[in-house]
Image 1: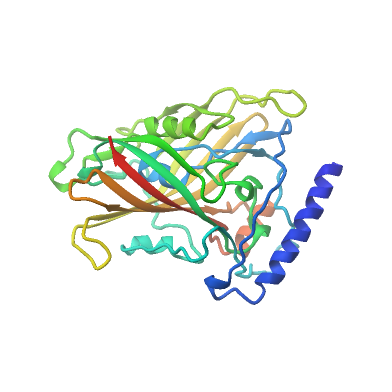
Image 2: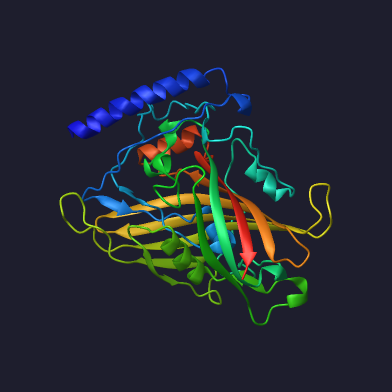
Length: 363
């Protein structure tokens, strides 16, 4: 208890410093503060794995669980909320980056979500079991690729008060210890679905099971994904993650078995086959909204995210692709929880962005 008290004092002081430096810089991205945060990683008996569908992993690469964090975690700085008062969260972003001059560009209309300072959830919602609920990729994606993903920037549009897990401050949705400028490489696969019209480019989909296992291994998760149950022919919008044995907690007690149910709740794609001023090759953009329900002994954790990824073909033979990707993290609208109150204050918008650059090389 005393350790958590001093940790909170440290973060309160840090947040106060950040807020004062940001009070006059909420309209210009060039004047945003860059903040390095190093917080304690608790591993209590109530520590859990709350998997999150990470950025580019679901929209074509893999599914990767969120890192381990305490189920009782609260935001580092308490927000003084008064339910029913109609309070609105001010836009006071905190940005963590190493190169403030670097900028993300987007070519497609859907890709403009990569640039948004504030972001509402993707709409419209999918209809379960509807025809063509799968995310189809251009034919050039077919095969196996080596992917290198680099975290470039972390942004908290409304400050740290609205971030519901310290794991999203210490690291990223992909890995609790992932820092800005960290790079990770792994394999991904895409395959052709029988019975689709290949001439229209609606036959190639991501091998979500292979990609999830590949990415989980590359990020060396404490509680790795052991199996992925996915029937793309029956319902491509639902997956189940089964986890292997996790580490012991600080009191030497096992963390217990856990699994996650994944629901793709919204999806959009956009493809450009014409040359633009920015590129001479094809552009493809995809976005998916995800709800993940993690079941563990004595607890259920719900997380909402969206992943937007815009791909660009880099050479004539299509053996190299480059992409920019964003993982947007949302609060869940539970009316009986503190998180639900915070969700109302931000108007349901994303409370954290994790921006990546991605290079893909065909094998």
